[in-house]
Image (cartoon, rainbow, N blue to C red; front, side, top):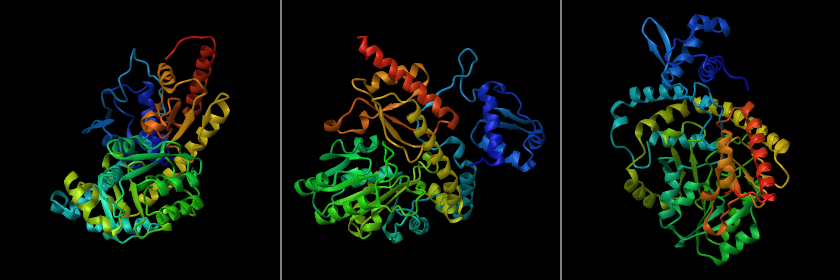
Length: 456
């Protein structure tokens, strides 16, 4: 998907800075010269410069022009830029973050609601936002009354509160997919918890039924779309069968649909669609699709959990910051979010496709990798007996950054030979080079191992 003109200008200025052609403190090209270069209006260039200014990358001097901020993009050693292949960072693509649009919505929220933005508010979120969220969720096949929606400080807060809250089934043990994202693993460390391995299409249903039948399972934690860290998605049939088992054995499901908005297939349904009356508790985040620093998420709760969740939310932080709630309401209501999602859906799908092609082209025999359906997450399992920690250290020497999945497993399921990769921060043209460097390093380590060379 081609970039808009103002985005092309932003990328052009950033590339000039990163290459060193534009020095810190130097004056940027004039608005007129860039308008001529990119065959666009003066307003388009102004919009690009305003976004760069809002991102604190440039600053304006009255009657003089725009200048590059000191130390942007980062401090260099020996005056030369270093290319870093960052498969570690997993936030939204920095070029796709809607800074200016959201800034406009925050200003509008202050103007519209005035003092309401800076006083205590409803514990479970602004009523007007909850109504707007109910409308938004319908497009994801999540139909719920606004009274059941709780606005939280990121979806992780919702999960953390649910982990500690008593459930109507009176059970105490949490069952989680293995692996699972590290913040969830951290939250369950002091709780009774079991794990179940998941494959490409989800857990083994016979094993799942056995656990439901034999153990005291309070809820089963599931990320059935764009799983973190594998990137896999369950089938609709698999989701439906899991919900049926949960009903049969009085187990709740906590469905973390943190990136459901990015699913390009309208026929793919969340588990909530198969049991919307309370068996499935639906949580969602706006961190990966919008701006992670906003810390905005939600939970759709059964009526019997609302009172306890409200008390827990009050004890945690009283309520989520009101100004970001008001801005999100405006952002959703004006159609900005829908437009933004269309853009990034294509962006991340393409990144996932580029990554998969690179895996197939470069990864050595014996290396296993998941097939990503988005650019956010996939896993790479190393040939035996290679270990992830040793590879990560070697990759860092080549400016390739990656993460071990050790923090994503319970102790009984621990693996030491697996990496989580994200390409959300890696430009398409750099993905193949980064994967090739990783594959070359894996081969080198395998050869050294055969020769008896000692390494970590």
